[in-house]
Image (cartoon, rainbow, N blue to C red; front, side):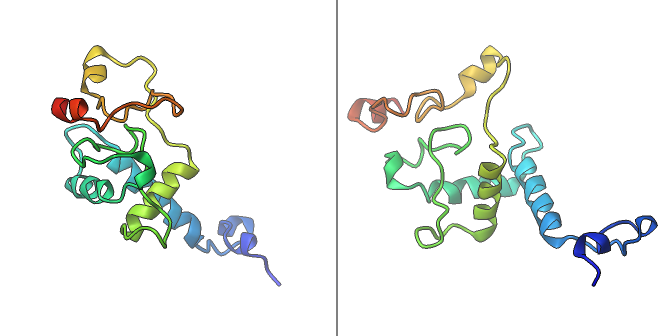
Length: 145
């Protein structure tokens, strides 16, 4: 019996160059994540729709009551619901976010410029300690949003 690893090797190494479909699909998902996280002028149009859909699937435990305060899950302290029974988020978006969690993708620039710092969302900020109770949704915060 020939092992799967042998069949996936290059013919010069005795294999048949069989395609590893799970690895290929994972690589496609990571490339999709890469294009989704491109915040330059080349930001894909589908990412804007994805942001809108993702903002509709924020679990209640994050206390995000205003959808306009939710901008991007990797720039803020909330994550979309990914459990199959609790979320109706598209499967491709769930897979994409599971890949970001698997590879610990996060926003951590080495030396952010002042312009970048000013452009980050203040509501549900990443740097806030999780044990700290911040009134993101009180009357004053809603007025400032």
